Length: 209
Image 1 (cartoon, rainbow, N blue to C red):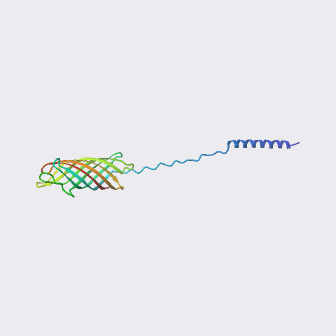
Image 2 (cartoon, rainbow, N blue to C red; image 1 turned 60 degrees about the vertical axis):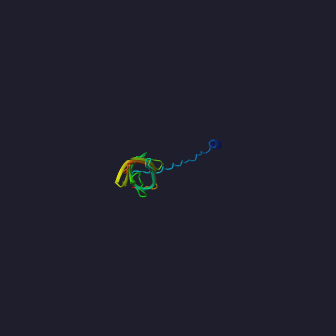
Image 3 (cartoon, rainbow, N blue to C red; image 1 turned 90 degrees about the vertical axis):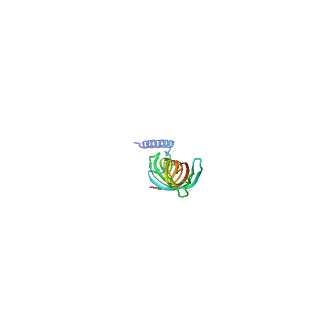
Protein backbone atom coordinates (compact mmCIF):
# COMPACT_ATOMS: atom_id res chain seq x y z
CA UNK A 1 0.00 0.00 0.00
CA UNK A 2 1.38 3.43 -0.94
CA UNK A 3 0.71 6.14 1.63
CA UNK A 4 3.04 8.80 0.28
CA UNK A 5 0.49 10.28 -2.13
CA UNK A 6 -2.06 10.63 0.64
CA UNK A 7 0.39 12.53 2.83
CA UNK A 8 1.38 14.68 -0.12
CA UNK A 9 -2.22 15.57 -0.86
CA UNK A 10 -2.85 16.52 2.78
CA UNK A 11 0.23 18.70 2.82
CA UNK A 12 -0.81 20.47 -0.33
CA UNK A 13 -4.30 21.07 1.06
CA UNK A 14 -2.82 22.51 4.25
CA UNK A 15 -0.59 24.89 2.33
CA UNK A 16 -3.51 26.04 0.21
CA UNK A 17 -5.66 26.71 3.30
CA UNK A 18 -2.82 28.57 5.01
CA UNK A 19 -2.31 30.72 1.95
CA UNK A 20 -6.00 31.57 1.81
CA UNK A 21 -6.02 32.67 5.43
CA UNK A 22 -2.90 34.71 4.93
CA UNK A 23 -4.46 36.30 1.85
CA UNK A 24 -7.56 37.26 3.81
CA UNK A 25 -5.46 38.80 6.61
CA UNK A 26 -3.41 40.76 4.09
CA UNK A 27 -6.60 42.18 2.63
CA UNK A 28 -8.16 43.25 5.91
CA UNK A 29 -4.96 44.26 7.70
CA UNK A 30 -4.58 44.78 11.41
CA UNK A 31 -7.33 46.85 13.10
CA UNK A 32 -6.32 50.41 14.04
CA UNK A 33 -7.96 52.14 17.04
CA UNK A 34 -8.67 55.85 16.91
CA UNK A 35 -6.83 57.79 19.65
CA UNK A 36 -9.05 58.87 22.55
CA UNK A 37 -9.48 62.65 22.71
CA UNK A 38 -10.31 63.92 26.20
CA UNK A 39 -12.40 67.07 26.54
CA UNK A 40 -11.17 69.34 29.34
CA UNK A 41 -13.70 70.02 32.07
CA UNK A 42 -15.16 73.55 32.04
CA UNK A 43 -13.69 75.88 34.68
CA UNK A 44 -15.60 75.98 37.93
CA UNK A 45 -17.82 79.01 38.44
CA UNK A 46 -16.61 81.43 41.13
CA UNK A 47 -18.24 81.02 44.50
CA UNK A 48 -21.16 83.43 44.87
CA UNK A 49 -20.91 85.92 47.73
CA UNK A 50 -23.89 86.11 50.10
CA UNK A 51 -24.86 89.62 51.30
CA UNK A 52 -27.13 88.47 54.13
CA UNK A 53 -26.06 89.99 57.45
CA UNK A 54 -25.41 93.20 59.32
CA UNK A 55 -22.78 95.81 58.51
CA UNK A 56 -21.47 99.14 59.76
CA UNK A 57 -18.96 101.72 58.59
CA UNK A 58 -17.92 105.33 58.12
CA UNK A 59 -17.57 107.65 55.15
CA UNK A 60 -16.30 111.02 53.97
CA UNK A 61 -17.84 113.18 51.31
CA UNK A 62 -18.86 116.57 50.01
CA UNK A 63 -22.31 118.15 49.90
CA UNK A 64 -23.95 121.25 48.50
CA UNK A 65 -26.96 122.55 50.45
CA UNK A 66 -29.17 124.88 48.42
CA UNK A 67 -31.48 127.32 50.26
CA UNK A 68 -34.09 127.66 47.49
CA UNK A 69 -33.21 131.08 46.13
CA UNK A 70 -31.29 132.37 49.17
CA UNK A 71 -27.86 130.99 48.35
CA UNK A 72 -26.15 127.73 49.18
CA UNK A 73 -23.42 126.22 51.32
CA UNK A 74 -20.88 123.58 50.31
CA UNK A 75 -19.06 121.61 52.97
CA UNK A 76 -17.10 118.44 53.61
CA UNK A 77 -19.20 115.92 55.51
CA UNK A 78 -18.63 112.78 57.53
CA UNK A 79 -21.10 109.96 58.03
CA UNK A 80 -21.63 106.81 60.05
CA UNK A 81 -23.83 104.04 58.66
CA UNK A 82 -25.18 100.72 59.82
CA UNK A 83 -27.71 98.31 58.37
CA UNK A 84 -28.85 94.81 57.60
CA UNK A 85 -29.37 93.04 54.27
CA UNK A 86 -31.16 89.89 53.13
CA UNK A 87 -29.79 88.20 50.00
CA UNK A 88 -32.65 86.71 47.94
CA UNK A 89 -30.47 85.65 44.99
CA UNK A 90 -31.27 88.07 42.16
CA UNK A 91 -32.04 90.94 44.54
CA UNK A 92 -30.74 92.07 47.93
CA UNK A 93 -33.14 93.94 50.25
CA UNK A 94 -32.24 95.85 53.38
CA UNK A 95 -32.50 98.81 55.68
CA UNK A 96 -29.82 101.32 56.64
CA UNK A 97 -29.47 104.16 59.16
CA UNK A 98 -27.13 107.06 58.36
CA UNK A 99 -25.89 109.67 60.82
CA UNK A 100 -24.06 112.77 59.56
CA UNK A 101 -22.73 114.98 62.33
CA UNK A 102 -21.40 118.40 61.28
CA UNK A 103 -17.70 117.73 61.87
CA UNK A 104 -16.15 119.95 59.19
CA UNK A 105 -18.36 123.01 59.28
CA UNK A 106 -21.93 123.97 60.05
CA UNK A 107 -23.86 125.52 57.16
CA UNK A 108 -25.36 128.89 58.11
CA UNK A 109 -28.99 129.34 57.11
CA UNK A 110 -30.19 132.63 55.60
CA UNK A 111 -32.25 134.96 57.80
CA UNK A 112 -31.51 134.80 61.51
CA UNK A 113 -28.32 132.82 60.91
CA UNK A 114 -29.30 129.48 62.40
CA UNK A 115 -26.69 126.79 61.80
CA UNK A 116 -27.15 123.19 60.68
CA UNK A 117 -25.68 120.85 63.28
CA UNK A 118 -26.06 117.63 61.31
CA UNK A 119 -28.54 115.19 59.85
CA UNK A 120 -29.72 111.62 59.72
CA UNK A 121 -31.63 109.31 57.38
CA UNK A 122 -33.29 105.90 57.42
CA UNK A 123 -33.18 104.22 54.01
CA UNK A 124 -34.97 101.18 52.69
CA UNK A 125 -32.66 99.67 50.06
CA UNK A 126 -32.80 97.25 47.13
CA UNK A 127 -29.72 96.08 45.28
CA UNK A 128 -28.64 93.84 42.39
CA UNK A 129 -25.30 91.97 42.20
CA UNK A 130 -23.53 93.03 38.98
CA UNK A 131 -20.54 90.64 38.92
CA UNK A 132 -20.37 86.84 38.49
CA UNK A 133 -19.20 86.34 42.07
CA UNK A 134 -21.83 88.82 43.37
CA UNK A 135 -19.19 90.78 45.31
CA UNK A 136 -20.21 94.10 43.71
CA UNK A 137 -23.69 95.35 44.54
CA UNK A 138 -25.47 98.24 42.84
CA UNK A 139 -28.19 99.59 45.11
CA UNK A 140 -30.75 102.34 45.54
CA UNK A 141 -32.44 103.53 48.69
CA UNK A 142 -35.16 105.91 49.78
CA UNK A 143 -36.59 106.97 53.14
CA UNK A 144 -37.18 109.72 55.69
CA UNK A 145 -34.44 112.08 56.80
CA UNK A 146 -33.95 115.02 59.16
CA UNK A 147 -31.75 118.05 59.77
CA UNK A 148 -30.95 119.44 63.19
CA UNK A 149 -30.42 123.19 63.46
CA UNK A 150 -29.63 125.56 66.32
CA UNK A 151 -30.03 129.30 66.82
CA UNK A 152 -31.03 131.97 69.29
CA UNK A 153 -34.34 130.20 69.92
CA UNK A 154 -32.66 126.87 70.66
CA UNK A 155 -32.45 123.69 68.61
CA UNK A 156 -35.03 122.03 66.44
CA UNK A 157 -35.36 119.05 64.12
CA UNK A 158 -36.85 119.34 60.64
CA UNK A 159 -37.95 116.33 58.57
CA UNK A 160 -37.97 115.42 54.91
CA UNK A 161 -36.77 112.64 52.63
CA UNK A 162 -33.59 111.26 51.06
CA UNK A 163 -32.87 109.15 47.98
CA UNK A 164 -29.51 107.49 47.34
CA UNK A 165 -27.72 105.30 44.80
CA UNK A 166 -24.39 103.59 45.25
CA UNK A 167 -21.99 100.72 44.70
CA UNK A 168 -20.73 98.43 47.47
CA UNK A 169 -17.82 96.07 46.77
CA UNK A 170 -16.53 93.35 49.10
CA UNK A 171 -12.72 93.32 49.14
CA UNK A 172 -12.81 90.33 51.48
CA UNK A 173 -15.65 88.43 53.15
CA UNK A 174 -15.80 91.23 55.75
CA UNK A 175 -14.27 94.45 54.35
CA UNK A 176 -16.53 96.57 52.14
CA UNK A 177 -15.79 99.65 50.00
CA UNK A 178 -18.58 102.08 49.17
CA UNK A 179 -19.24 104.91 46.76
CA UNK A 180 -22.59 106.74 46.85
CA UNK A 181 -24.58 109.79 45.76
CA UNK A 182 -27.59 111.12 47.67
CA UNK A 183 -30.21 113.84 47.36
CA UNK A 184 -32.21 115.20 50.31
CA UNK A 185 -35.21 117.50 50.58
CA UNK A 186 -35.93 119.01 54.01
CA UNK A 187 -38.24 121.99 54.40
CA UNK A 188 -38.90 124.47 57.24
CA UNK A 189 -35.40 124.28 58.68
CA UNK A 190 -34.54 126.70 61.49
CA UNK A 191 -36.59 129.50 62.95
CA UNK A 192 -36.96 131.08 59.50
CA UNK A 193 -38.37 127.88 57.96
CA UNK A 194 -35.77 127.61 55.21
CA UNK A 195 -36.41 125.02 52.50
CA UNK A 196 -33.28 123.02 51.67
CA UNK A 197 -32.14 120.76 48.82
CA UNK A 198 -28.87 118.91 49.41
CA UNK A 199 -26.81 116.96 46.88
CA UNK A 200 -23.94 114.93 48.26
CA UNK A 201 -21.41 112.31 47.23
CA UNK A 202 -18.95 110.27 49.23
CA UNK A 203 -16.86 107.17 49.74
CA UNK A 204 -16.72 104.87 52.74
CA UNK A 205 -15.38 101.71 54.31
CA UNK A 206 -17.56 99.18 56.10
CA UNK A 207 -17.33 95.89 57.98
CA UNK A 208 -19.80 93.05 57.35
CA UNK A 209 -20.59 90.90 60.37
